Length: 426
Ligand SMILES: [Zn+2]
Ligand SMILES: [Zn+2]
Image (cartoon, rainbow, N blue to C red; front, side, top):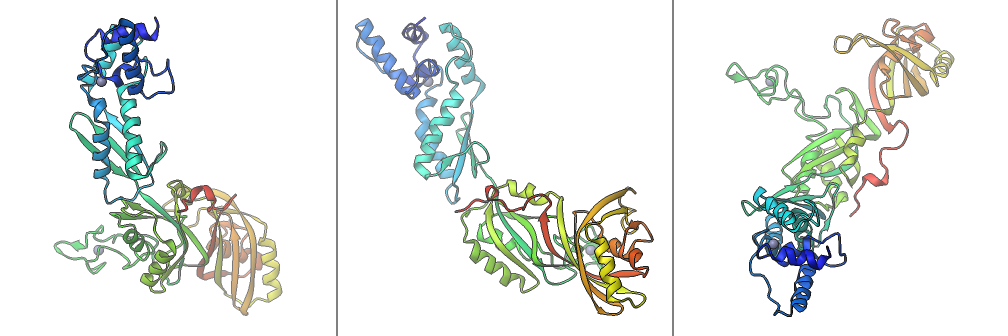
């Protein structure tokens, strides 16, 4: 059958709009929108039959839904007013009755059930095109800023505003600050115990008043005028450890942002003012959602700075010799005693990439260790009663203990965290 013969058969089933007629032949003739193709077919059939051309005022297949694409686009643009977005995607919920009509039409004409283009696909594309014209944003199929769902049964547009992401590195300049909010164990974060304010947290619900998250995320959420924020760190240091020098990568995820293209330098300055010297952020940049997975992979190497105390005096020569032994060594570690009640006991190996340091006096030293992710560095010094081998204690033959521990750098194990494809530059 030719396209014209099929078109004539389709028109014989009842009133059809140009779009529904044209959709039947979407894969058999290219280069025209469905409505244009339907119109052209109708014109040429009228010429062939030598009958006057008549446009259709009704459509039994889509019930004239195809002619409401401008209306839908306006509804969508209105629904998202007040929200910045650069990319979007349109989906349509087509009632089963209309989908059924599409199938019936094809059956009546003698075409396969999936011939041409489905109503849903046509509406997604045509409404999508018009939303682009109205808003200047672009269609993206992966992970758009905004997802529109047109519900033909209710005439409503559902809008889902996806999160925005800001990457940076933080330094923690005061001890006893956890990375994220830490609910009080006594009251499970409720702030109350047996009807009274909880004594464990003075009724705040938190074990610590402040966290790196609470000292940074609110400023970013505010700048983006979002609903809430989540802090994703690339691992975390102990609560009593500082995070210094180049800092630790993080991503702040902002829910339902109204503003996306923020001035990151201004936000960085505001965040640092807000944190008042307790926490500093730097290198803030807009990022894609993939950056969250990226920073959360725990496979990161770290550099530590430590204050170490020796129970007996040692010489600088002995210290340097021991550190030389540690540099490049593969360390065998049984699960440390301090965490073995939480983790299964096992022996694992981690490499020390670099070890250096110097004596402050004969029983104190400052030491720097760059080790693979997962290296237990306190035990590398103390030996943990022989459970870590080799160790500084073992090599010196003098019991050594870490009295202060700071993280000074966090890096991806095989490649840097911050590669361009995970950023979204304005
Ligand atoms: Zn129609
Ligand atoms: Zn409490």
